[in-house]
Length: 208
Image (cartoon, rainbow, N blue to C red; front, side, top):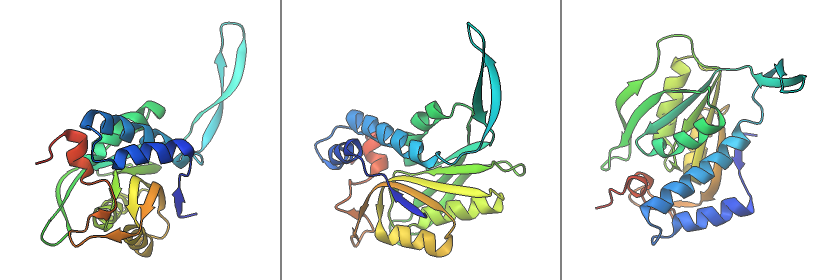
């Protein structure tokens, strides 16, 4: 399984509201957070755990704890909208940042910021980006995480274009991709169609 579309009635309903041009930024942010939670739930089902024992108010109980270091890697700036809900699910996760923006003339990613350690890679990295359009930013992020020698990389996006998925899997076939929906087309500006517009602008209320 390289690509999983999280198909659920709540996902479909939230995604519909997200697409609506009438949805205000405050609601848009909440919808993104809800979908990020559902994506993270699916993407973390194969995390390794270790047995442990805890003391309850009555007696001891056996349980499990995460046995892997998890890194959240939001692609700035839109990816920041997915961090808090995933961090709520995995409070022990580390958060590292990659700043990439798309050159509007060439639709290629430009790296402008990076905060990754030089050694000791995490066991699993979750790349967070609401939109997977051309796949350029995702490929650049995966390439950088491979240079950091992260063994398992997962990409979480609310909405993807088929072209973006194909590009990522062609270049990095071991990447696991989790999305809430897949649209067939990109327009001449490389925006997903029908899509939901510029996710970063809608999250941060910076639409011109």
